[in-house]
Length: 188
Image 1 (cartoon, one colour):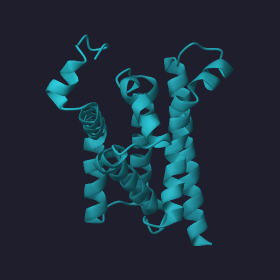
Image 2: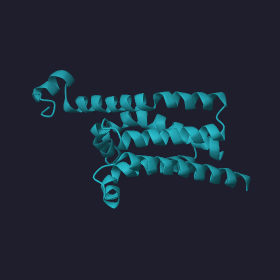
Image 3: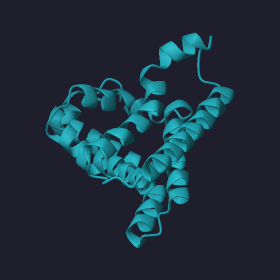
Image 4: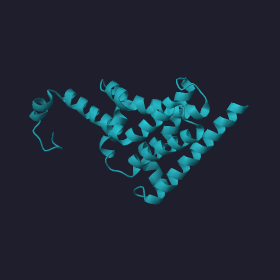
């Protein structure tokens, strides 16, 4: 209320309770994430459902998803407004986590896992496929959560365009290495 320049009574008036306000915030985060990834998610879903998702298309989509996540986390300020809420919900879930998970996190994570499984040939519902996908997403999240460490190592106060370019190119390399390794593994 203070940050918004409103009287604390406005929370009760407009939302009924602090919990209801927080639920609205979580729904807003879900809507924001869906707006960011919506077009790419539709494209990936269409390819998966039509059976047209080959390894090359899957690798391309994986790279694009990770690059978009990277861009949102290190180049755009909008996500900074919700980052702390998302980190809090991930590390110490409240009752609102179920809403965030169902509305945004699960659909995106599941889509990423199914796309990666199109390369690996694994069952996308297997624990191994889910963990593998989470590890790949985690490489991007590390640049947000452990931002202070990497900026200190880079002797920088903030991420610059050249940092983003190096990170993005390295993400692409990692996807290429993982995809090549999974394809090679399948043939053995």
